[in-house]
Length: 114
Length: 113
Image (cartoon, rainbow over all chains, first blue to last red):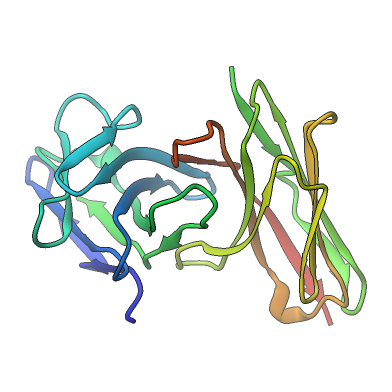
């Protein structure tokens, strides 16, 4: 079991471009979460998804950000028209159904906007 | 507003001693509290989960306590080793039946040989 796979590990985008971050959850996990982390700051919740459904997107900016978890394939976090302030580490986590499981995190994608 | 507070100052302890990290929360009635470890440049790693009706949980050299009256959790690492040096994150699940987890900012632990 390869764990939670995120790619790319590092992504450099110019201002105004689009960034696509991918996350494949652990096998058997039906819940996916995206978090953002700035240097020396904590993990900030962005969005919680199950297959084909967004459960909670309260942490995601209303503009330029979107997320999906299709029936087939990885979860995608998409940032349109990136700005310098979007530079951060983006972590994906997954968990099985049920509340009393910890999350399994991926290694993150480090987005740098130049 | 809801807050999870961890000591932002780094904790330095001597190898072999017990490290104790604190997590305080306000305006939460968490169903579960979790602790994670994060190394630089890596994703957090789940360590322990404790339920609201549990006072204490242990796993090898780790011990977590959960006091819902004080709104506090303590995380202990006994016989600490330099390899335990990392940032430790406290996380809460606020609502039963809903799996979103909110993280504290973490405490950096340095174990000195």
